[in-house]
Image (cartoon, rainbow, N blue to C red; front, side, top):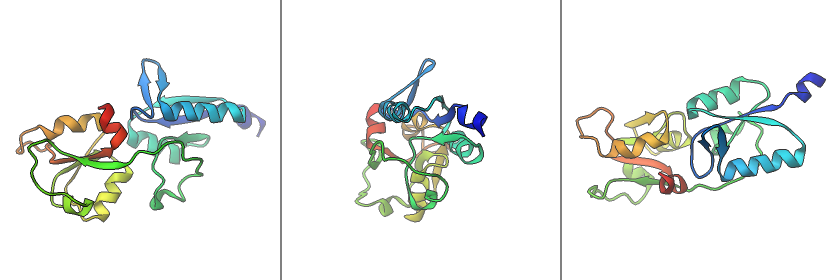
Length: 171
């Protein structure tokens, strides 16, 4: 037990600027700063690793002494983790190229379009609940903006990109 207490926590996250992102070997971002402040206040040590979202999400559920941040606190995840926070807010939005001329007033209006999202992200579950059936999952959010401009015949092409407002501004 004492060895387990002495071991530093393993924190996992993804590249999701401005909240958390790799800068060389360092991990930075507003959420990273908040997490480090919480760790310091609690007197805990932690190693932070940036990885693909799906890998981080899986590791946090499967590995003891492992925590994940920043993750959306949604109903289907409530029992998967012990929650602390919130440490940030990132409103979700749908993005398209300026040439996209279909009216989207609510998320359900997007259900017939090809939507780009991050694999295993809460926004995927949200869009599926809204009736979306053509969600194209990527390993990282940074891949999605370029997918908007692909020819419609390309299997990776998307019409819309769902992400957080702050993340979209950074990308």
